[in-house]
Image (cartoon, rainbow, N blue to C red; front, side, top):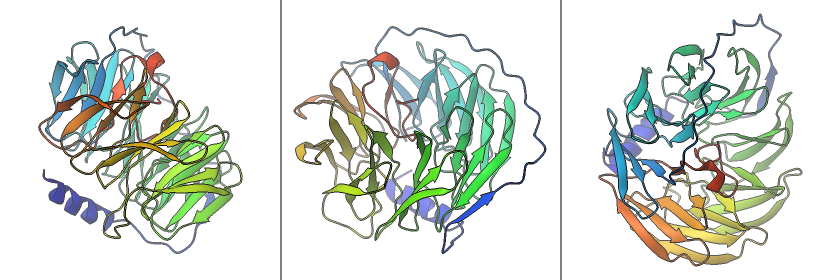
Length: 389
């Protein structure tokens, strides 16, 4: 699928989303709890090779070593927009033709696959033996991470593009309906929901008892994670469709006014902004930042990856690819990895931005890379990336 075709499909999907003019909190009356299906106790597997994983629109999930050489590839049924996540010795990823895959992280062998009712562009979230993934068929799927068996599903009114966020006792799902739904992760029982005024492409993140999410109604929301009540909001002049990240009390998020915002995560006070190129009202900025080693790394539709001082927002260096960047960076042992829609994954020196190597795939990269060695991953990551999970 070409980039223009992808854009057209996205526009058509978004046209299905409802439009609202005001935010609304709804605390659900205590429903009868849904049954809690048993979960297979997963086997913990220690991975020793520093392998990188990334999906491409050429239908391949790539395993790449730290010199830029292919270790193995797994062929999916169609394009992979979903960002992979590593858990229990497996790589989990969704496809644009209605599948969720689990493959062996060491050799790429298929362990199981599960067919959904729509494209899975959401990055899976895996914890306590369960896998959660949103789908454009409007369902949130909970699967047994070991077997791939369905545990439960939750039906939204519209498609789910964003990746689900998990706290200790609730799962947060943002949908094209404009709602954030808080679910019991064991059963899928709805606990509360919060309605914004526009569709949600932004993946929520939960930090210190607060859920943070951006909306296409040009508003960024901070919501109490347990009650669903509003903590604070910020109104911009364009949609928030990128996913936020919180580090050291500062929230970072990209807006479609082509600015990276830094907010006080508690109060919502704007601390600084950084321009991600010349504003183009016809192009939404869907990229998401990463914070590592005192720096913010963030891509842009102007083809550039920026490195900024995380406290001041001062630009430190920039690296130019050959086309738009939608993916989230990955930082491992001082190297920044970033995918571009020029079809390449780049490895850059985190201090200078100097290119170490690049790896060419057969099509565009929306998928964000992750690493087999979680202990070597540095920084704080948005939910849309598999690296922080």
